[in-house]
Image 1 (cartoon, one colour):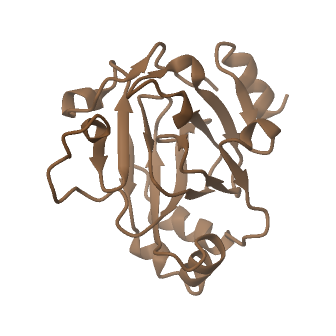
Image 2 (cartoon, one colour; image 1 turned 30 degrees about the vertical axis):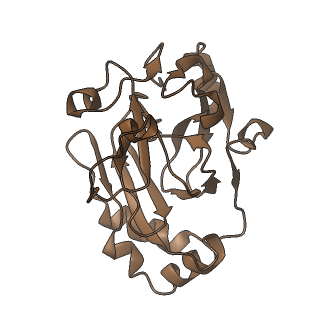
Image 3 (cartoon, rainbow, N blue to C red; image 1 turned 90 degrees about the vertical axis):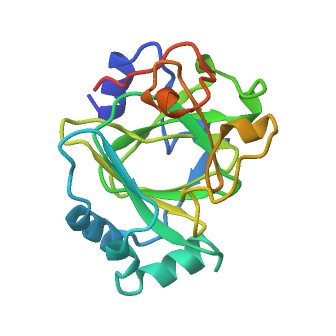
Length: 223
């Protein structure tokens, strides 16, 4: 049985696909001609697994300093746009939140993992029915673009070893805000620079001030 078949069997209540399936096309695309080997090797060394939970840095010097890698990412993936190379890594199996940006996000799977995605078009104001969420298996070594219209959050692991996931965005994204949030409907969910976030009512982020906008099940990915 393949990993995808196992995930489908163990998560019958969650639509499960691969990023290589046609169902991923509304959310993003696989980039098959980008050489990510050096970045993957650097990430495996630099992103030391935490004791528990998830860690994230929007820009990791050890990755941005890999010879030739930053220029390749900036040109090939970002079209010479402003670029930062960060990492999300650790241990996670639960949806918890959904976020979106104004720009596409590029990711490199340093380990096998699962992405839980939903479309901004399915938002009802600042609320999202959990039934709109789909799961996508992303094998190690895969480079993807996740469109700006795709809501996402920390990947879910598919082994007890956790996950590592390179996150490439415009420079400054996910840094702390320097101004007051605008007094608008969308301003209520502005969480960081170019980052709008809603949480499931059971998510710990609610205690930190996140809007509890995900209605329904807080999915847990079993593997």
